Image 1 (cartoon, one colour):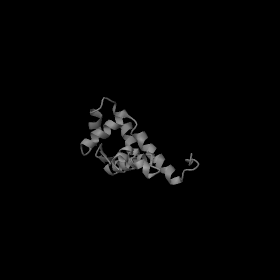
Image 2: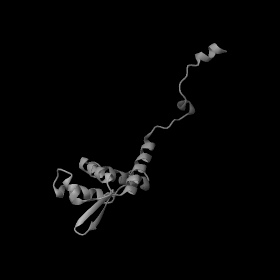
Image 3: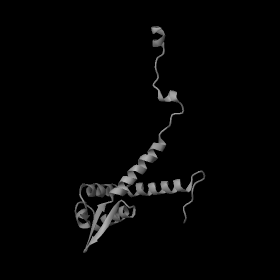
Image 4: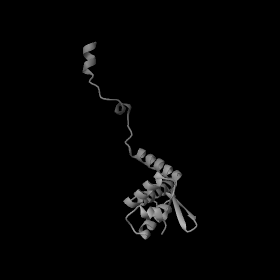
Length: 129
């Protein structure tokens, strides 16, 4: 089913928001966050090493790795019979920049210069003159 753009939202913004939501969804499980943290601490890791570091079945860990790989957050290189996983650091950096840009758009923008300036008690100035 094709994605429908909401009224008032351009196609590029809609696609960007959907991509961002997909990445958040991939990060939306504590096991996947732990896998990313562990991979960030080293260069790469064989699937078996990742499985041994978690109290989960191999099939469960493989499913989590597949979600992270599908989202583009990790890469997999097959070496013999072992899959070596590593973080895609460029994708992580791009995700961070995308999140920062999105959050910047959520901040209120001042509508006038007076909103930028701190409030001062002008009665002090009257006493000086």
